[in-house]
Amino acid sequence: MAKLRRELQEKRERRVGRGGGPGFAVKKEGAAQVVLVGLPNSGKSTLLRKLTSARPEVADYPFTTREPVPGMMQFEDVQVQLVEVPALVEGSRLGKGLGGQPLSVARTADVIALVIDVSADPVQQIQTLVSEFRAAGIKLNQTQPKITIQRRSTGGVEIRGAGMVYGGEAEIKRALQERNIHNAFVAIEEPVTIEELEEALDEATVYIRAFIVLTKCDLPETSPKLKLVEREFGDQFQIIAANDTTEGLKKSIYENLDLIRVYTKRPDEEPTRRPLVLPKGSTVLHVARSVHKDFEKGLKFARVWGSTKFPGQRVSRDYILRDKDIIELHA
Image (cartoon, rainbow, N blue to C red; front, side, top):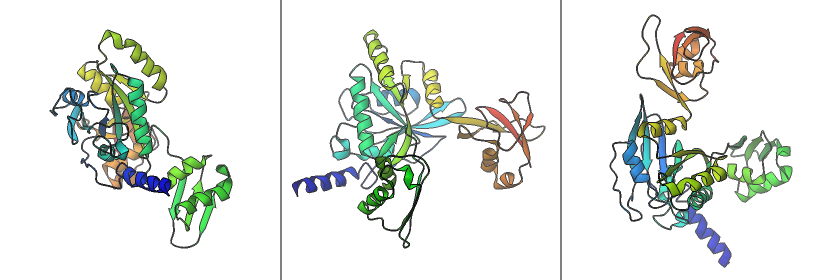
């Protein structure tokens, strides 16, 4: 009974980080929202001051920042919103430090930046943050499994692709029953573990891109620690050293957002100065959809300047665009 009480208490506390309790809310602005997350005194406020016009308090004592502080980072012709949240500590999701409220901002971000003081123990800092995120149902740089779960009011459980899960249909039904799901359609399109299935059943689980920003790395004695972080986490995260110039740092952050800028133009006119900002991998059809639904319906072809072999080359609706392409739509 004592064990069950502890588990119930942990679940209640964990809901703060999973969106089930009170939390911070920051309205998204700009091309993307990047949330700066780190342990106390990791350099988040200094980073925000360097990259935006925001002026958060900077001090050498922990928890100087007690609520989210947003700022707009201007990179060339794109604005990106950076949001500093209060520091996390080991056990934040369970109420330690300032609690799990910072996680409520992070879980709705477009991208998360792990701000790490490389002069301290960077490996331990990264492990602590990743652990807090994982426990709060926030998966960093992980691809969401191809699992579709549609709850229904009647009809029992229908499963497609049961052979993709070790244990098959019996194991899937057990996982559903544990969550009181008795009527649902479940489609599994790739091999997954039972743990991945259980995460998919948890509606609070989110999958977010993340990168690491190393601060205080301009000291000679930090060089071995920089290499250690690269060796330990380079396969999982893109790593940015904050000792770069301000413009260089902005460029590195922008490149980690996986966005492209596309400039539209009409025949015989100059391109627009203000770009459309779209996810990397977007096609001509995505641009047409962003401009107007009528373009999407009647689009015949487009001409593109930039990534094509020659200027103004005619391309199909499925042509994949690149950053700074200029496009002319023809319906």
